[in-house]
Length: 427
Image (cartoon, rainbow, N blue to C red; front, side, top):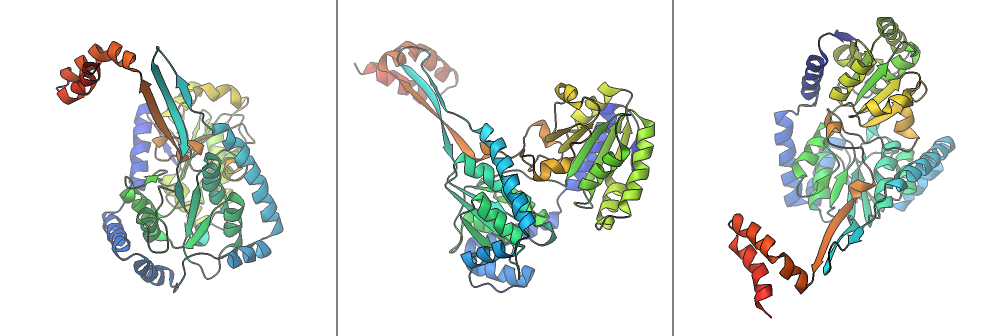
């Protein structure tokens, strides 16, 4: 792993530029995705069928995944996987129920009522990758908050397969997906955004995907809502001399195995720990089935920074604003107030990041590329709308007329002022 030296500001700026490079989208991808979206918009199902044959090598006559395939998935799924999914579902539900918002109403003066309604989004589309990137945990993490929010219809799309991974369909059924369609890639995002003869248009799209999916989500944003534009996965670990190098190395590799573009960053005030972690990473790499991917990630994007003290470690990581942040220190909970920017925090020597990926209940759909400076993990709040309402009596309008019209005339908007004045002209 490359070691970086300099001030925290210099290191943070360098790390940010490196991450931007990893997330930079290819101009050719942008153009190709735009062409696919326009094609699906104009030709609907016919375009989807052609892209399925071209990209997935499967001929489709019906996009919907029928109940027979779902029943088959439940019959084929490993019972241990089913049990784990059910337990994870319970944890995700109990955590996300705490996020439910309530509306409010007040009356600051006589004749005035102000309030806010909470309403669920009507229809949401969830993208689920196929192949080796088919993660049933992501199905739960995207669908369950939407269900808790009260979304009326949840549509799931996933690339067509000759045989679906049973756990994907099982997770969809457990989480409460209403309909599943076999369509992937940029064409699937286009179908959700515009609708086709078979696939209904949705109001918001969530879920992970490759660069084509991410680019398509970016291009349809505004027509529909999206969760985020996610970059490569990343983990930051703050560790002191009390950390176990075996644990730290394993946690860094847990993200490195995702993708050759994934990055792992260790910030420590202990040279001894840094050396031990590096040695342990090399040792553990030897036994990883995804060694090639993890090694490329570690060697190209892995970074170690030696900080002067504890405050320096937290200051730097707050500037990095990582997707996942582990605090591998004794009494880690006591340092929680020092953290300002992170997608999700994992405290203590035993709280490995995969606990959050699969089981604890907090969401694993997280902001990347330092966007945790201004955005948050996926949650119930992503699937609701906040609608304001106001009511003024005639007397309340009369009392506020001068203030309102003064501001309207100051902005040069006479019709705004007149809309207030006419109500007091009519006695």
